[in-house]
Amino acid sequence: MNAVSEASWVRERYNRRAVTYDLETAPLELLIAPWRRWVWEHVCGPRVLEIGVGTGQNFSYYRSEWEITAVDLSERMLERARGKAQRLGLKVRMLLMDAQRLAFPDAFFDTVVATWVFCSVPDPIRGLREAYRVLRPGGRLILLEHVRAPDPLGRWMDFLDPLVVRWSGAHINRRTVENVRQAGFEIEALHTSVLGIVKRIVARRPEARL
Image (cartoon, rainbow, N blue to C red):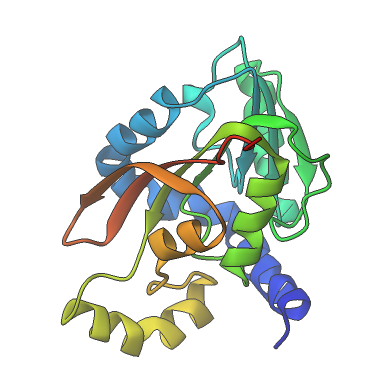
């Protein structure tokens, strides 16, 4: 399966889950909320891009002084996010878009944010390189991701990954820290939780060298 067809397959999975997604994830939100808050406390504006906005679970952390663009691969997830933004009175530009092909100019954003997203991007390094491209030199990439744990747990995650991704569209054994570095970013802060499975990452696109 190539990246385009896999993206269509992932879109279908999230379109199917859109109506129940908030209900499915509600039990985890009490645990996740402090991590989400940490992510958004590290955002520098004014131009901010959220990749994989989903149903808008990060909306309560948006600040009015930011110019926020939010994208998602799933039409139905985006519909729910638009409804939620309207109810909250948020001003946010929301677009249907693949993280692997961002339709923005080079060096356009000050910060790119994603929470629980690069587990689902078919080619995560390609998606991260797109984030790199649209960030200004010195701009920040801030991620909250679940990743492959160290062995021996990691081996179990490798074994279970085909089953999990078939059901949910999300991989559980991505090596996201390594992928961020491979995409060209410099990691500034890295926090690990839950047996090495959860990573909070602040990375920077290096300043242009003369």
